[in-house]
Length: 118
Length: 187
Image 1 (cartoon, each protein chain N blue to C red):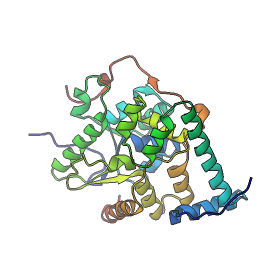
Image 2 (image 1 turned 180 degrees about the horizontal axis):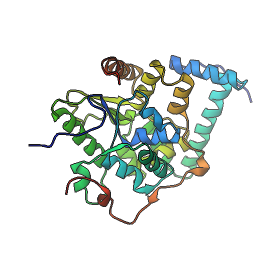
Image 3 (image 1 turned 180 degrees about the vertical axis):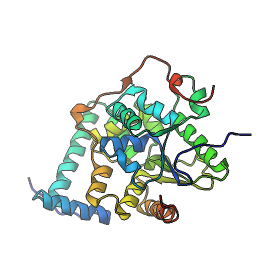
Image 4 (image 1 turned 90 degrees about the horizontal axis):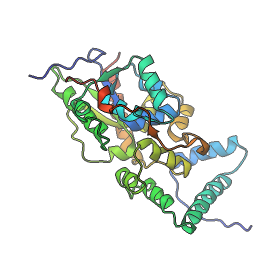
């Protein structure tokens, strides 16, 4: 199948880790990206054909467009762990805060550690 | 006059985690990372209740680890009064109660509260002075920078899919008794 080049923006740290992973497994970032994208697209197309909206709901959660409450209600999940497992099954990441927000929390913890040695 | 909060660890900050971080770390077989800084870890009773009332891939692991490590389980009014209800957010309500208890303690006790990212983003929490709300990811980054976790471990815990899909199963009730019966709050 013919392939084409395209440009995309990626998180710098994610790209670094992807390069390490690709090198470790003697493959390329393009191959990794294709494999995951293929899985995602195949899953969504199949779900759509079957009239199943679960994949779309999970994607909306991963992208921060639906809250965990909304997803759990829509999918009638009782336990948080079920949502966690469904996301893993769908190869989708849990929603994440911005890098800067996490950095601020790390700094807060470092300051706490400096003042509270066991 | 509220009773003073008696918690382990002298005046060290207390670590408490919502259900999400417990689940994430249990899947990564890395619950001991909650103990890495040497700060006392406290399990909120309602969170333990939510984590273990159904038979899930991590429920037994967490229950066993909490028992083996003799993790202090904090009794809350929320758990005592929940009366077996399977209502959402009871764990978070109990954590909020624990936050208030820390802040009202004399002297106030510092607390570090772990949540998954999507719960941090929720604005419904009132965060008292002396309490820090952090994500599992930031906790792991902190441990890495302090030299308590190798960077390879960080990637493994924070990004690993929890289990092969074939092991997925919906949760189901583990016990027949009312969950509130296991809450240790004053009656």
